[in-house]
Every structure is written in structure tokens, then in C-alpha cells.
Amino acid sequence: MNKAELISAAAEKAGVSKKETEAVVNALLDTVKATLKDGEKVQVVGFGSFDVKRREAHTGRNPRTKEAIKIPASKVPTFRAGKALKDAVNTKNTKKKK
Image (tube, rainbow, N blue to C red; front, top):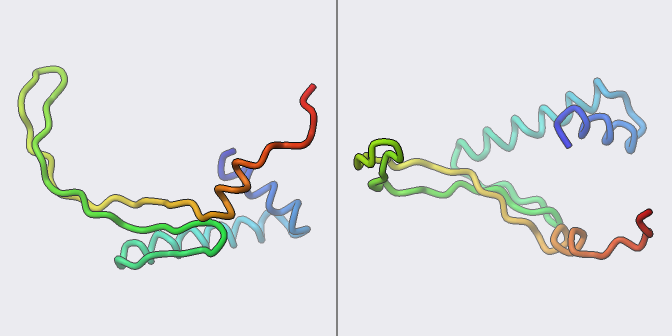
């Protein structure tokens, strides 16, 4: 599912326009990005949490030339699913597939 499909599905489920839903989805994503950029964690109970991990500088290797290269330290966004989301994904679908 891409962003446009997510917006369409959410708009239909909530009974509001796609334009309103798009504004809310964009605001949510912008807020999550800004919060992570500020070094804070975003936790949605029942869904999961977004956090930023620090990746230390290390030495890598160019696969073409086999030359050693230095990879600088960086920050990486991470997501950890909550129990309710894990349970929902692992629940067997009771509908029969044709």
C-alpha cells in the first residue's frame, strides 16, 4: 500500500474527504519527522514506537574495487511494533481464501 492508497482507505473508513485525510496524514508524518529530528521518541500505544539510534563510524569496503572506505557516524530512524500490532499481524484470518 502506498501513501495515496493509505489516504483513500483512511478517508473511506473515517467517512471524510480525501483532501482532509491527506492533510491529516501529512501533518502526522511531518510531526513524527520533526520529533525524531529533535531527538525525541514518538510512542503510539497499541501501535509501536519510533526512535532514533546512533550508528557509530566504521570501516566498510567498496564492492567494486574492494577498497576500504570510512563510513561516518549517522543517526538512523527505527520502528518497534507494539504488542497489539504484533498480535493483529499474527492473528490468523478467519475468512476462507478462494
